[in-house]
Image (cartoon, rainbow, N blue to C red; front, side, top):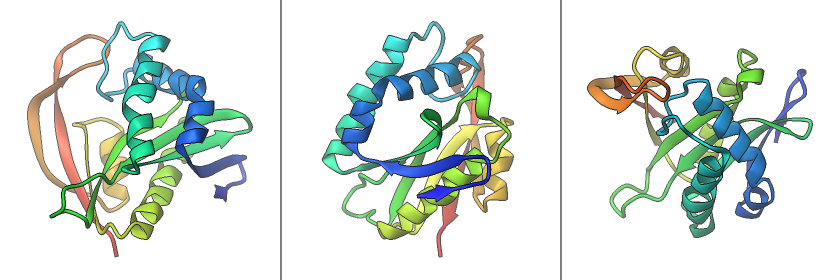
Length: 180
């Protein structure tokens, strides 16, 4: 658990923790999608849709032991989260994928994304993972964030996904980082 001067606490959540705070995580994802985040969803996107994602995708993966969830909390509020998917094939026990780095619009520009990623890399190392991969919308705020954290660009795939709000096709940038 890591805490900073702004009162943000980063901690790893268990499946039971997620189940107890499902509505808070649903509200986080809902707010991010409505702010235009490229995290697999498009409008219209309801709180029920958001809760269904956490309940149907993340929670089962966590219960199976293949997903780690980190959350940034400010008091009782969930200010951000990130997932580490380490449910890999037998020939890839050294690898994991960063998924859905989210920071609530009310908490952006405070270093929360950077803090979540630093903690996530620590979790990856503890799990024996030495290679992290991710994808991010090309030209988005995430791209320079990840580059500043040492992630390298592999390439760009055009027309990869639809924009959350207006539906236009957007490119994605594939990145990786080798951990020490």
